[in-house]
Image (cartoon, rainbow, N blue to C red; front, side, top):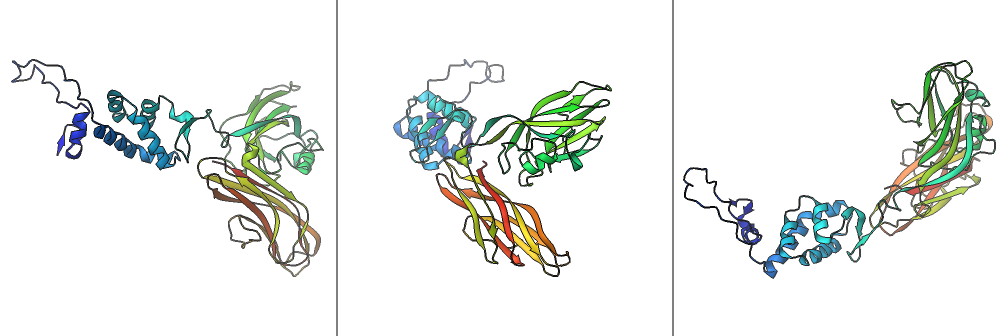
Length: 412
């Protein structure tokens, strides 16, 4: 049975909070002789009533605190303590809070989105807007050219035609040289930066058009990065922007450049990149490793979670293999990202990079091939974990990994 907004089980508490019947409307039948009176002041709450109200509020909002990653015992103790410091009027106001933010604002006078709860003590401590263990840091670079189609070779030589998409690397020296960029390469991270800041310039265009830059493997957005106009000898036009890079797509496939309209030469200079703070990223590189037909550790790096909650770890790796292939033989190489040393798995294992040369391929001295792998893990609060890049030769003999990079990052 309900009384207004109260149930039988909460009637005493509701009445103690000052819930009262509303005065009758004097315009209603049977109310001509009624004189409205002011609601009486709510009775002072007893200690038991105040405690019951505080614990009821902790129960009510516990699911929200859990979703926010708080340790519930410490959070509840801190919330109840704050609520019991309030006077009766503020405690009643807290009981009517329509959101978690409003409740904490009443209880502490602080914005809950600018404070964290310590998982051990439950105390509320301030933090800056944003989170150093979550956010990406920007590293500025002296402008470094990664593509110039006036100087490029092969598929990177000459103006980009209307409707064409050119995929480029921002970090591989070999690729950058072929793209007409700096022969010495550019100081970008070796494995999958979160995003790159760049300047794109169009020159020698013959009419109207636009250019769109987007991550390789992503759907091209219906938006332009740069627009250019007509003229037989136009002035170069440039624009600076930021684009996310493709994760786990290999060193040759970071971003794509689409041209629509008139053909044009395109120049791209990187001017910085966005990456997690060093404390939330670990990297490792290694040289040649001879494969023996047994799972071996190639390289590894360790990562610590500084947050007060579990975080997802994204590990990615790129490795270049050398296969001394003989006709009639079948060569298979795998490399696996794992939390255990010498754990290689098989072709179907998540996180496996796989290189395959089948028996029908003619004999060749050195079949060099690059492959990428990616795996995700969960790292609990405050823990440190070592991530291993392991390699194995499943079929064939005398093959090796020439070079490789492993990179693990706390991503959320």
